[in-house]
Image (cartoon, rainbow, N blue to C red):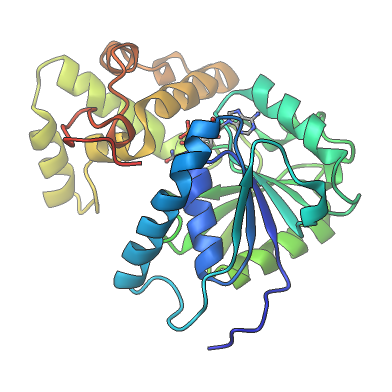
Length: 288
Ligand code: NAI
């Protein structure tokens, strides 16, 4: 295993559930990361989160053995001197906020630097108008947690350039991720199929058809799912899931994709899943 410095350097915007764990994946593969979040409190905590994830991922054998962990820097504003080879946006699932942050950041990067959005449901082309050169925007839908799941969904927008796709797939190969490239569409393949199913699982719970444990046990035991839908929803974050479902409903016109009452009640009560310590299940304490 080489410990040569990596040719890649990532700036990651957003140090939440995904930004932190994309950072872990990169650092563990020797790729330095500059991690940016507007919330200084989150930045104060994220180093410990990443350390914990690095230990866990190594224990699970999902990071290269013997590879030195690369350097992490953090700040509340992108450091223009860092010079990333790829920028990854992983802020909240809100098209307006993503467009604002992309418009702001693209002017700080050299013209050819690819910009990745880790959106789970917003069509990439809808965000492309915010970028100075839409050819450099591409979607990479990392699966949660990225340091354990070796596949990613790559979304090539109608205006994404071939050179952007090539540069980003080469970066993903350095991170040990296998890319499946799909056409742009609301929710792409994975969220379009998964999120409505998680919504229906919450609906069944709300209708009193089964308990959370029963729903998950049936889907795991009978249908071979690795994790039950309600535990998966807790892992994703119920606020994020509700945002994604709203976007799916609006962009597809399929009304049943709207987040169900049971899900919305949890979000209103601050029960956001693992990240808040309670969702469909109790976790004792927040598990960022
Ligand atoms: P999160 O809510 O855990 O974290 C979002 C972070 O973005 C917060 O720490 C917030 O302070 C920060 N932020 C907000 N505005 C910002 C700005 N202008 N600049 C820098 N930081 C800013 O959200 P999560 O779950 O990490 O999701 C991030 C993105 O990844 C969303 O687009 C989501 O749909 C997508 N995604 C989420 C998955 C999941 O399982 N949670 C899976 C795959 C994609």
